Image (cartoon, rainbow, N blue to C red; front, side, top):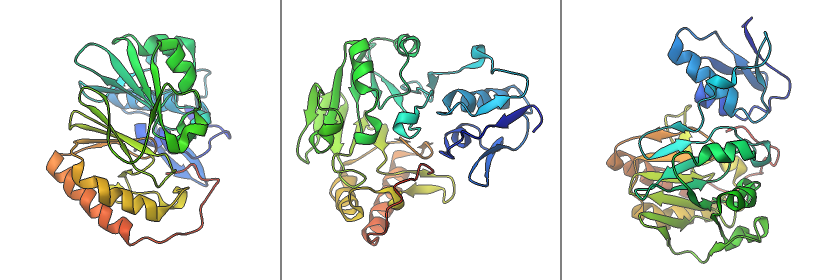
Length: 289
């Protein structure tokens, strides 16, 4: 496309394609612009991709993108917002703000660090907790927690990635984070992977599972399951029956909302598929989901 291009810093992380499917595609190992936006809704989607991209690789030929079109944090529904501004230091992972009935919020994983962004993320209410799903999303956790005056959470299995965490989730049992919010240890992607469940509605799954545009289903990313695919299968078998949610909100991969009964059915099916997987070589360079 003449008006927009993707520069050579692109790491093919898929973030832009999540926000602007149909406008941004993939070619020769990186994202590429497929066509210009056709209306205002598509223009908003393109700019969400622009301001989420961790390498700032999506650029207008004419100069810099208009900061006034930065949509983040962007509401997914009335209870959760996606932070955007994904960080290279978390492999471009998505992060979220979970709004609580008290008027406060919790941050799940973190966007790139910026004092101005941190101030923006408190516009809907003070952030009381920063919840890390696992070690490779921990990069900016302490800085955000300190800025917010919030508690930083991580599981003991990944504690060396955030040794100054204020709250440590221990063992394999569910832990209450706050009213309506629980942490469920799910070792597999890493030893200390955790998913956070809120209000029987939201599942912040980290890198344990995600919604795939390719298969239109829940999937695990076995090629980047660093710790153990067999442990992940066991974790899902132990935990899946206790989870009820409508939204899957992963660190990498697509977000999706379905009726809770349908999501439960798909999670059970994913558990069965994962049980059949066997260890395979790990792609330690992978960032694409």
